Length: 258
Image 1 (tube, rainbow, N blue to C red):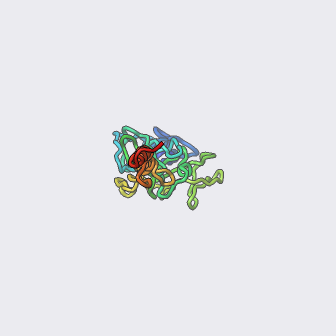
Image 2: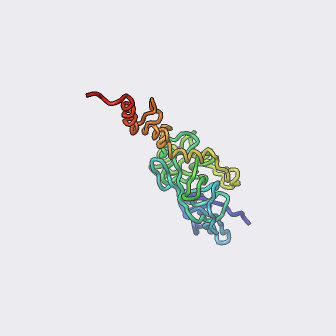
Image 3: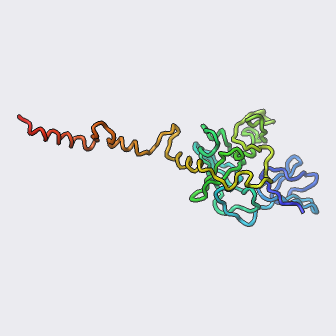
């Protein structure tokens, strides 16, 4: 008996000459493709290809390597609907929409998140927070976009050097792709993709980026507040107490003569 195989939307699961498109699949150009993430079942007796949803539900946890579809991109973050966990043949329960902050997109500095992701991209990410909201990272070589479509014709993009290339439009696009883009290691153990390990660096940066601007300066640090109150000014005088001290100094000299 064949081992269950994990597939993602758009994966070729069979050819139309040998199988008919069944549950969770569709036919295009003589190929049977998966229409949802799930487990592939090939019914050889009836020659039907099916993709069945994961069951029973599995709760996400920190360190899980997941697959999702990018459905929203903003200035400082992208959101993706998570549909599968690498190494598990079970449907996800609970919160399925995760957020990727711009600081967790790539190992290198990211100027524009739209250079890294586009709507409809399928990504492999790692869970770095579950509650109160699902937070993801792609800032590892094995994480990032695993399948991308041309922004103009929606054809598949292939790797050419460091960029992606559309054979139909002859258009070049940029993404934050995985090391195995085009030859995905879907059957590899989750541990080989770094599952279960979340770098402490990412956790610290995720907290720190909320307090720092792009120039690295502290947006709400105590130093600025102290300066506003006058701490550290020459003579130790502040705005509120300066006049009182001046009055006190004059009082030591005695009353003025008129």
